[in-house]
View 1 (tube, rainbow, N blue to C red):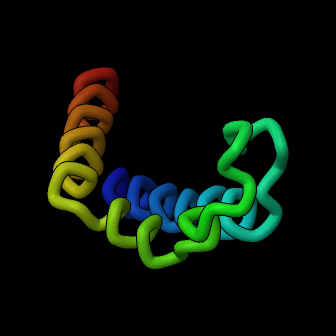
View 2: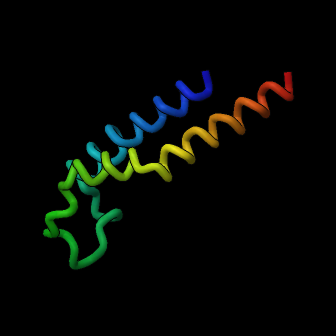
Length: 75
């Protein structure tokens, strides 16, 4: 169950935060001065590939295991 919640969090992070807010809306407080017109701000594939990197997947499974162990220990 914890792994499902963590995977759902990763999907929401990519779709809502990365694609919608950073790539599409691009609020001024997230953009460094002088980089407003750079092509990287609209690179949807970059955010997806960074989320699917082995380091991110390892963090996802490790966090799920830690949370699951803590919940199991507390109950």
